[in-house]
Length: 54
Image (cartoon, rainbow, N blue to C red; front, side, top):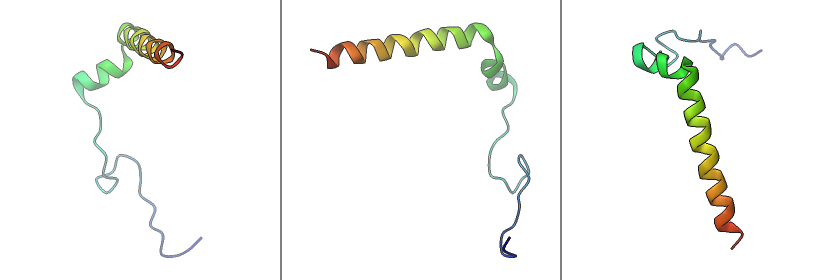
């Protein structure tokens, strides 16, 4: 490995990403919300595919 590469630990202040908190963490882990999102995305993809076939 090169000496010029600095390793940054995930979720450290130098990493540059925000940690999910509160409501955002809840939405990422809520099974019911994930099911709703899954259905919505599948409906969108189905509509897009149907439009492309005409």
